[in-house]
Image (tube, rainbow, N blue to C red; front, side):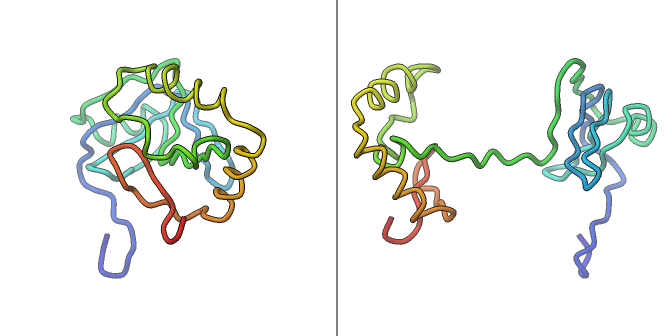
Length: 145
């Protein structure tokens, strides 16, 4: 960034994600089949064709995303409104993959009543969209929630 806030692309890219189907989410909603993304640090430098970005940054490391979909800048901000607001920060963070689902979430949801789900939806709507990180993998809303 410059002092005026304009984005200035870096001379070098750390790595390129190449050959992926790039979902740009630009105003034209383009999908670049076999496209590429150039990244420096934590910044997306450019999105374009694989040949264009490989020519522009020939020395950059490459990650081949052939057969995959790439969504640059995607923030997964979905919210579970049933169960999670009552159990946030209760599931241990150090469980093996799958255990948090099958040993915690599934039994928890199996024991919820309609009243529990209604309360969860009310908590979510009253507290959203101001999540605050409180633990290694959990969030709770700011304020009284």
